Image (tube, rainbow, N blue to C red; front, side, top):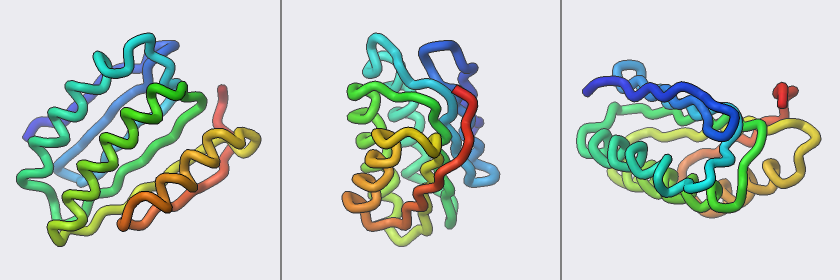
Length: 128
């Protein structure tokens, strides 16, 4: 399976999914006007990956900002990871958020409560 790479813009994050390493990262701002349009190809790619996933998948969110519609799309992404985890594979989510952003912190906490795979919520200094 080929990696998925999308360059960052002011409103959309960079996406680098490398199935050969089992490392998947979304980073930057996630403020698209139409999150469904931006994230649907990513979800389709992940659905394909889930059919033949690696023994271990590490998913990293390293966000500066997100809007509420994006959070819903992230929930959909994590539902795919949950399927992989329930199927017996190792999945881990590393949720990096700016140390001073309570909303992004709360998103990480909510994801930790909503899914059965390990979620690490990590405060960092992220240039915004």
